[in-house]
Image 1: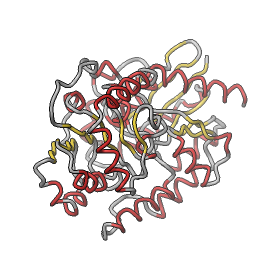
Image 2 (image 1 turned 90 degrees about the vertical axis):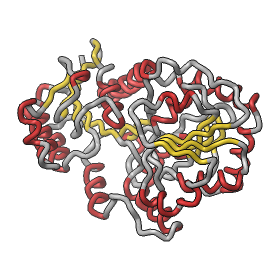
Image 3 (image 1 turned 180 degrees about the horizontal axis):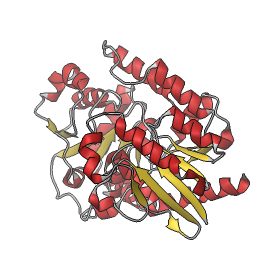
Length: 375
């Protein structure tokens, strides 16, 4: 049996990014591969014999007063008994010193990459903000790029959740044999009514769900929507980045644009939509794409937004995010074609049912075992 020690530096609540970590690792509990998760802390619903909370419950308030203490404590706990495991599965946000310590123990390192390499991401985002005549508003710096590039020399394998992520690391000089193409996944059990259909309506409802920010191309969608002149509404479900609120205020005030702040229960947003629009400029593989497809929604997305999951012309339409004319045409095409929406929506749902977390974890587990056997 292969024993894997997995490390994440953030509280595990089975939501957002911790949902990916938890959903994959909890499936690696069988005779061929057993994973132990080390986290700072976790929700009660996540607790089990396969998860270690580095911070004792009675000390959480003390530790979380400092942004750095939880991570420091968790990394120390992870390294304490790493010798008892065959390999390490590391998540973003960990210190370079910890990656070096794992490397010194000659433990194979599988490193999760949730976005493109930082050097490329910075270039994409700097350009996007420049087009809006704004100063870049992201956290990527020359120091964080250097930190990532130092880690790349130490890790053995990178889980890349889309072809775009693979390509970005290839261009960064990472050898092909270190790059493991994979996907993210979704949990149908979190959406009990995902099979239900939207009641017939004369008006089209187009959904964008997620952090409404420059990185995800929200401004580009709003601009295309204004030009499309569609009878219906564009629903933006998620927190607004100040840059979007500032530069798109006149578009957000349109009567056919509806904005809802983020809420934990957002399943109804999918069920009330006719299709999903996601012109992301920089992405790994967005979880909302999987969920939207699972709800039977056709997808209108950029190559980054589609994440290698959406099949162009089958599950939806893939478009250059900066090609406004193409986005106007795409919005109109799906809005005016109920038969096409039904056909693509059915294909999208079937595709999503092949990408549930147990299936995704099984494929990733096979990749780990094959690489470990080769070493």
